[in-house]
Each structure stands twice: as structure tokens, then as C-alpha cells.
Image (cartoon, rainbow, N blue to C red; front, side, top):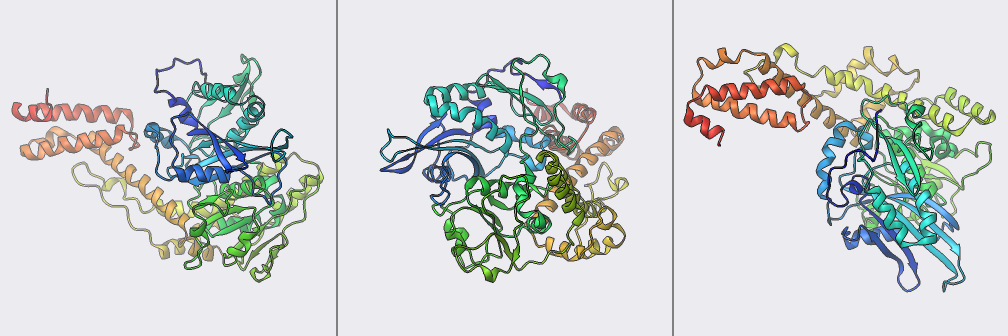
Length: 566
């Protein structure tokens, strides 16, 4: 895509407007012997967090005492917004959302926290340890970009402290805003980070950036292959034999507890799991790292109702006791860094969850609907033996999951498209016909000749999987999104039909009331279309404007004055 440089003409924006296009705020959390975890600094200083949000950030920015993380650890969390300030520039979301893939939309009601935690021996401190976290709070799910940013900023900050942070925030406030489809150069601390912001119409394969974009940049930029994609193969290494079962659990929005030895392992596993439905948006709640101090702890652990649709990443074994009633619990061990594949987690019955020293395993009574793809496992194992780079293995895995999701969704898309009224039934002077209702039985019948077997070799009970999918939040999310897009398309087709009609002939036998009504309706359609809400061509918009002027011109002067006040 086009490279937009920071040196592009800057419009004088509100203070922090560009910063806020990327981040909400930057926090520093420190460990105080009297207070425990405390918020030492929030930047920009006037960014208001509620007390509940501050408390959540403090607890979520430090590893549980069980993790024993010495040295530097990077991980992520996601928390609910609790009232408080909403940036005035959230209005710009619409422009970004209309072009960004649904999986990379800004969060409307949650914050992501990207954490760099350092714990090192320090004799000058009472307890003998320096413990601090630098946290980037954002509504964008750009985990790869923000973690890369932290690895540049945090070590420097821990050495030099506050002034360096202020300078970094000022630099971020000079960045161009994230525009889907563009390749951006983002200067920070003497390094230029180069990233591509994916767009809806990008090829879903992430492409390495073209060399020509980098010729005139000195120093040579640090090129990030993706703003959001994790090393999927590394995350899934202990569970490769169950990737498909886990994919089904995600598709069905099932409650899943992930118990890991440390927040970095828990947060990567949760983010990997929630990303494996692309291009579908993950519609359920997910918490890459969660602690017992969280204000929602009671809500998630209650036994009075069914477990919520949430993927919960934890490190405290206490959760196994409180969440024994959850249907699926995945326990992963310490990551093995050696070249070989780690011992694969076994499928175990939930009744085996007796003690806190439970062995790694996927504890569930769930039986997968689809048969396992043995060929994929063979290819990945061969890659391990041949020491194939992790990113190549990840690409294999990601493509497999993408094709699986697409095979599942394409029949739904086809059926949904058949519910759209025929183009010839859309006439200019009548309200357009409705989109027909979705019938699950009709859809299931359509699978015989147009089912997933056309694009997927996997055998299994696809019908059973669809039936269960209909009850999940993901069906609801997918259907609403599609229905909304189709309704807008219908409106756009109607507007085009009006613009192609002969308006003068229509006006001949109409009363003033009907003509004024047409003006008001056309104006409303124009406003909606211009607000990027309707998929219409620019020429149609111009014709609508001309029509409005022409129709108003045909009315008596007193009515013209009402419709076009000076």
C-alpha cells in the first residue's frame, strides 16, 4: 500500500488526538511494600481512569505470586471499561471500522493492556527486588505491534525513568493515524517501526512488506510482518493434536479455562485461541490474563447459573477449585524451548480434576464433531524434524484454520445471499421488499448439494456442528452483521433505482405534500450515504443532490424557503 510518512502535512489536531488514535494511555505500576501494587504514573496526565479501572490495571499488570517471573516478562490482558472518560475522538472509529477487518475493530467496551514487567534483585529496595510494569492501554488488538514497542521502550524507561516516557508519548502523538490498507513508518526512540495496517479487502495472507518502501529510510526500519498475528505454532505447540477440538469449542463459544504457569503463556494461548476463527469475529468475552482480585471474579465463578461464554486465562491453581463446574479446562505446562515437539496435552475426563496439582491436559467431556486432520499433524511434525522456521509452521497452521472456518461459513453465506430480494423487485417509488427470514431447516436441507464437503475433505457430523452453532453467540454475531450489511445494500440499490428513474414524470400528478415528502426522504438517504453507511457510488450521491435541488425548484417559493432556509 502507499507509505504515508509522518512528515505529511499535519492538520493542527487536538492535543493527544494522534496519540489517542493508537493508545488510550500509558501506565506505570510499581510494587510498594505498604500499598502493594500501586499506579505510579498515568500519561497523558489528564486521562481519567475510574477507581475500578485503576485497581484492575494494578492487579492485571503483575504476575501472580505463583508465577515466580524473574527478569523481564511480556504479556497482555483485557478488561472491561467502567464508565470514566471516553475519548472525544471515538467518533473517528467509524471511518476506521468501515475499512478494517471485523477481527481488528477497536473495542467499544473493553481495554487491552500490553504489559512489560521487570523483577530483578535490587539491594537498594527494602524487599531486595525492583518490581515495575510499563503498560500500554489501547482499544486496538495490535498485540504484535504494542509488544514490539514495549521491548524498545521499557528497558530504556526502567533505566532512565519519567522524562524518557514523556518523550516517547510525544513521538507517538506525531504518528499518522492507523489507516487500514496503508504501510506506515512509526518513529520511536531513534528506530523507525514499519507496519502494514490490514484492510478488509487485503489478501488474507499477510505479505512481507515490499523492499521498495524502505529505500530512502535511514536508519533501516524495523519491519514488523504483522501488527496482530502471534506465533501461532509456538502458542499451540503443546496442544497441536487438539487444535481442531479447540477450534470447535471456540466456534461454539464454549466457556474455557486456560491454566498456565505464567501470564505470558496464558495470554498468548488465549489470544491464539480467539484468533483461530478468522475471518469471523470472536463475539464472546475473553480474558488473556485474569486474577482472583478482579472485580468480575464473582460474576465468572458463580455456580447459580451456567458458566458465562468466556475464555479465561489464569495462572493461579486456585481457579481449578472454584471453576470445577466449567465444562472445559485446558492446563498447559512450562513451555519447552528445545527443538522437539513438547509432550502433547492429553484429553481427560473432567472427573479427573481432583487436586490442585492436576497434570497438564484438556479436561472435557466434549466429543469433536469433525474427524481430526492427520495430514496437518504429519506436515507440522515433519517441519519440526526438518527444523522448519516457526513462522512457516505458523502460516501452515493459520491457513488450515482459515480454510476450516471458510468451509464452515461459505454455505451459510450462500444461503444468506439467497434471502436477498431480487434486484428487479426493487422499484423507485415503493418501499423496498424485506430480506426473507433465516430458516435453520431450509439451510440444513441446502447442505446436501452445497455443504462444506465441497471445499473441505474432513469427514464428520457437520450437521450436528451447525445445529449446535445456531445456539452460539457466534451465529448471532455473524447473522446480525450480515443482515445489517444486506439491509444497507438494499437501501443503496433503492437509492440507485430512484436516481435512474425519471423523476419529472413521477412528479406530474403528485401533490405538494408528496413532493415535500420525497425531498425529506432523499435528504435523509443522502445523509446516511455520505456518512459511509451506504455502499453507493459517488455519481449516485451527486445525482441525488441534483434531484433534491430540481424537486425543490419545482415547488412554490414559500415552500422552497421552508426547505432551504437562507
